Image (cartoon, rainbow, N blue to C red):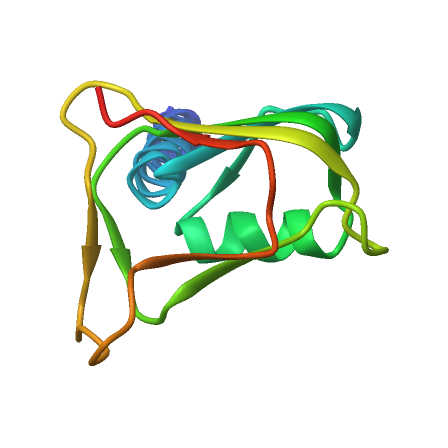
Length: 132
């Protein structure tokens, strides 16, 4: 009888630990994914990134292509200047980019760089920044 109870409680504890593990994984993934990218070509997504800089790097490297929508879903803390290159120089290939917030989302710069913007468009065309 004691062996059966011990086995029963071990199973319950393992289930509880598994539930807690998946809960924490979900919570931490949601808090880190502040930028959502969808595209019509390449990796269409939605794909989540922690920063706009990571999203721009993926676009610049050709991961997302075509008409691209970027939604800022939470407060983003950029640690460096974020640059978007033109969409016709390989491997980047996009026809348009729309950047907009969702809810109370914002972009912050941890340490502002003198005479530089948080977002720099280097030859990029057809980019819409909708601050709402």
